[in-house]
Length: 316
Image (cartoon, rainbow, N blue to C red):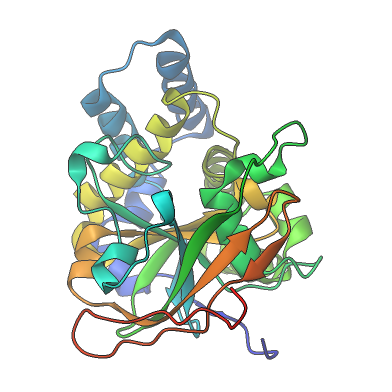
């Protein structure tokens, strides 16, 4: 990548904040009340007392009073991975998008069962030069990180690259110490928003916003231990949709499977359907039993409508 920052840092305009009454509402929530609501979310999910609509209502009480931090997604591409199960070779662009078979969709970091979400990795500046292609493969093949797991035979995955066809906003949930320390893009975002806080909010309001974003950023980037771990972040996304409507189309967060070196993005189904992103190209990778990862094909580009063809490298 060049030195151009991969996201435009923005903040809601004063007019937008006033339209949503967020400035006035922020003054009506105390740090004590925020902590009480966050504790209630944790206790409900920990004890298994989970009525999802009630979790959304708790999140909504927060979202309607604490401003969300957003960036305009302005990157050359985002990259997504799909496993080639049973040596399946993809030929249609729709095969590489979100899962169209709702009955096969399990809980995800920002989705319920049967709820499609387009998960991908966005280019950024990891301080250890961690490539986004490897990050998105780890998101799909989580066992590659486990030392005790043996891969009995070659497996294959397909990476697809999607360009931004129309600009859109994403909520940023990566503003916490681990992400900031490992990724220069997040460090720059953090510094920008710190300046925004100083200019727009009182010290008390700044503390409220920072507390919420540390909490959500940690939740969004943790390693999953149970499906319950995803319910809070999913409830938060639903609360965002309930309050902001279609103004927020995606969530950006640190990638747990890249140890938070890279940045992931989750787009709503409607954002994809309305063609805010456009398929650009795809390539197959081979994962060997040694866990070595190498390209297996040339790049495939769309030929017509929804169709493309892979050509494997000579010798494969």
